[in-house]
Image (cartoon, rainbow over the protein chains, first blue to last red):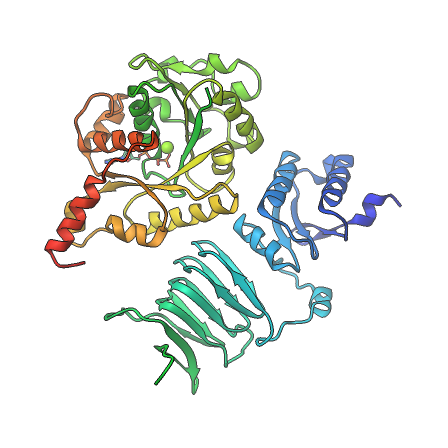
Length: 226
Length: 261
Ligand SMILES: Nc1ncnc2c1ncn2[C@@H]1O[C@H](COP(=O)(O)OP(=O)(O)OP(=O)(O)O)[C@@H](O)[C@H]1O
Ligand SMILES: [Mg+2]
């Protein structure tokens, strides 16, 4: 067996090809993949490809370069699956899907679901329209969440800025999750199974916190003292 | 020479990118700069029409990239100005004829030829957009004072940032002050409030833009129109001058008078 076949595993799925990358430096994985493709160009040409990068941490430059190499070979990269939230974010920023329709049972088993109270994803920038962040734990944004951006969190969502996009806290049913923001004017806000849209607001803008109270979504000013 | 490569892009179509590239190109060239405008909208070229150079096309961008001609041969000289050139897009090809790395190479070659390279990006966020921004040093995001255009601009700014190309600057086109005063149009401040990037220019809605485009004579060439002046201001800001935003001050004055802010 050649080295390349150890590094990459290619199989057909309903909507194209799924390529799973092993554990190795990114440059080696990329070379192995391109090699495998160049050995059988006719097989790959025109394919829709989903890439499972495992725990590799990928930045825009790397993923964009790979997409370019693939596109030169007539292959359309449409999805990147990853265990790393950085890589998922990168893929989303490049407009790639981060899920394929078939669930990945092995991944679900091996990666322990972070409970709502345990981990948080720290985002140090504004989320602009089209950005979508999904995370099993809490999500903290240092910046705005603009209209057209979306956050889905297993836990709570904290926005140190203006929240005007769509947010879903407690997405796996955690009714104790909260959403707070310096300016809470979401296009749509959900906690667990409850949905609310922002009312037209008047009066001064102040930090607010939204939570579920007896099954009803309520938002109230955030205060340190009563 | 080492030119600055500037790409004008928008996400949403029809907001005025082609108009802006033609007019900023003319305005910079009128200031004695050597300017090459590049039509990056392959398959839907129209910068040549707006600049009135359609009948002089022999070679195009794809000919340069595929080596059928030298760069200089594809640069059409606009004789109304000493140093203004256009590289037209191919009309009979599609965006897949060009890759981002082709554009990077082309821009590197152009940098040695002039002071400014202005690239007209196609609408959308697909391949043509990625091609258009690949070689850019600076990106201008253009939008109109409409929610959907601003939303698309926001998306494009996010994509530009994700490609690690720095934060773009904003040109707001087709502002109608009378409508803003009535509260029927987003104001400059409304747009800046959402996009939170540096403002490079505000261009008013102006019928003379359409007249000029149809004549193939960008209005920065001679007219004293408001829009023409706004494009001249943008060119001066690109050259590093501090030029006050007349439109913005007028708008803020009105808002104060009406007690809205
Ligand atoms: N400031 C303005 N006032 C009035 N009309 C304008 C103004 N700016 C642009 N227009 C008109 O809007 C139309 C679209 O402009 P233009 O072709 O420059 O947009 P574009 O962004 O390049 O479009 P596309 O996305 O299709 O390439 C044209 O008819 C143009 O004359
Ligand atoms: Mg155009």
